[in-house]
Length: 267
Image 1 (tube, rainbow, N blue to C red):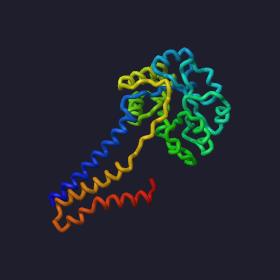
Image 2: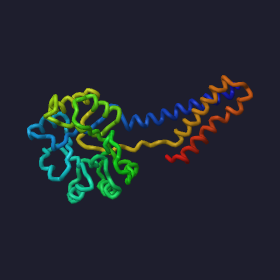
Image 3: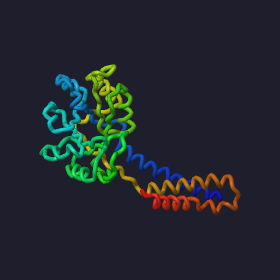
Image 4: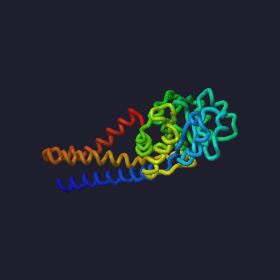
């Protein structure tokens, strides 16, 4: 029994090491302190005199819904096109490429998604907002996606720090509203910028697509085997000797069960 228990603990240790490999890979792709894009909506910048202060706060991107808004952007602020099926033909006719393309309200069709992805620019998907059309599969854009935080105007600075730290967003949009109480203007953007900088983030001048997180299959199956071995070891401490042979196959049973569920439910 002692020899069998030792083997079970070895399998559990291998599972822990396998998890460490995956966590290390994830930590390299999603560091806590990193570069993040800071943006405003060009339509909400009602005074051209705001731009120098916004740029000083780290704003290097602006949301634009139509090509006619491009002329309102100062040098150093790059457009992020918010497109829909209605506005895309006007963007398609342009020779210039925006810093990124976002689907308005996460609404897209297969044809629109295929055309946008062929432009080889980052594609932004809005966090906390479900896709309203599942005709296109965003998993097919692996290597082109960026995560975008864009919520209605609010004064909660912690919302931005949590989104960048926990949700790992690549572009944070700060909404402006001079009529709010308190007014959300340049000072609000400066506060958001200071909070992000205090957590070690830097403000990107170029949006880069998120690298694909490689999921090692051997890691997953080793973890399943380890969990089965751990359960078998714990049960062996409580059950009699006549159950030991049955418990020895619990790890393999766990692998077979997970494999069957994966085949039944899909990835």
